[in-house]
Length: 346
Image (tube, rainbow, N blue to C red; front, side, top):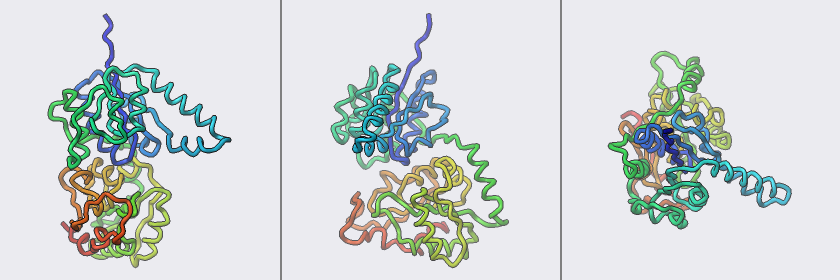
């Protein structure tokens, strides 16, 4: 008699930090069902984290952000429709025993609904009525519970016993590449500090001049080599910050893949960042993270685990979870360079 293989589908599309925080759930589910085959649906921006992951048998990439503008133009409408149809054909090629919605939005609900799966699992009460596509619903989650623990609750529901909150990033090759890149710029006794000064929300940003002053002090007082990171779109921001500095820093914004960024963070003595996806990537890679928080809640989405620190003012209006602010984003503006230096020293 031929044994059937259990097939499991993960749907976690975005964003970078959320995908990283879902990786411990992947490992816990694989440990619970060691003979299973696991597929994962992800969007383009976070796909680089999962490509080549040893626990993922098939990675399906939703190019929704590319398809949406294509659908709005007559010249590209049919091409987009063809790509979308091809994606759903690929999704439905396999029948799954379990499909897990870790996103909890309409865009993931549609994918769960279209998937051929016996058990469709997720949380009740998720946004945009996405839970209507499920046939097994966990109780609505506590919004103040850390996202990583929330994802592990799904693994526990499936039988995982004491799942680990850590995960393994397959970045050995990238770590060697990054080690070679930094070797020539480091002298004996120097420390490596990586600074990621950007974020998608304007309300999460810290003043660029303060980042410049912070980097100057790290170089002058802590004998640090400072490397700024970010996406290609962030390069002008990091260039402006470097232009305000007295000391020299390295601008690698747009020059690393996501896995290379994780590898670089793992080699650093400290990773300083706003509340953004690379913060979670650095924490998962084993870096010591110092994160600046304003409108969001570190107990929900902060760097997970020991060895990290958060600088936060704790104003009465924070966390507000707003992308815009009518009172000047005081929660970020009132964070001082001295406070960040003090935490860095710790």
